[in-house]
Length: 293
Image: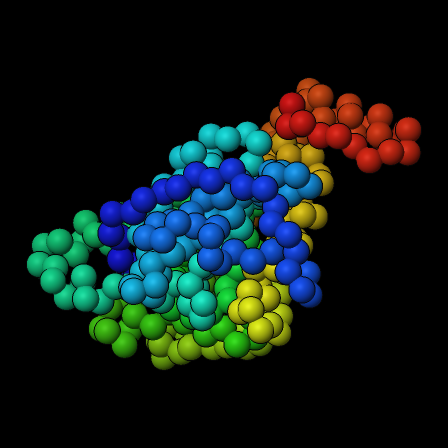
């Protein structure tokens, strides 16, 4: 499970950094001020519409802090969110056990509920979310990644819901989201055994969509996530949000109800200016210029 300490959120409107040798964008060093638990970076230029949320608690191995997603949720200019780590070798190691050890028994239940609520907030963001797993994602760290729409991992990354080793169970959605991602039987096996898998194994299980070889900078998954985000932001943003809503709600119901949900979501895109822009761009054989209207 996850540890939730007080956290500072820094909203930084950054210009895209100069590509480093080999391509891509680094997320370390000056991208977040020292001491910030969480960096929320709104990219611009060709990457406008991408928001990078960076976890930065090296001493606690990115034990999950008090994530605040309201500013992202309410910003209609945000088209895709990339969740990554600013700590080399660690995505999020889950519980801050030193903090947990100090808790009275009566504090545990509310603590777990808060963790579940905050990770649910991540899962409920209306735009696509991508977890870039370049290091260990254990316990609550993997639960956070499971709340994202898409997971990309370095082949060297380690992932697992390891709570049963501590005589507890995943409490921030792991028992529900893991079976939905990889199937009931495999999810039970991983949780019962507190098994840790690497990125290649996770790809074979369907736990992540892509597994990439780690690079010398330790950010291969982040770079692949950025490539994917760039594909997403070219599409109609309202349409993408409605597609996500239709899929998320539809998989929880029977097919007939799911088709009704799809119809309702489709109805939301019909009156948009973006739909007309898409048709005009197709007719004029030019790239569309979507504004989210």
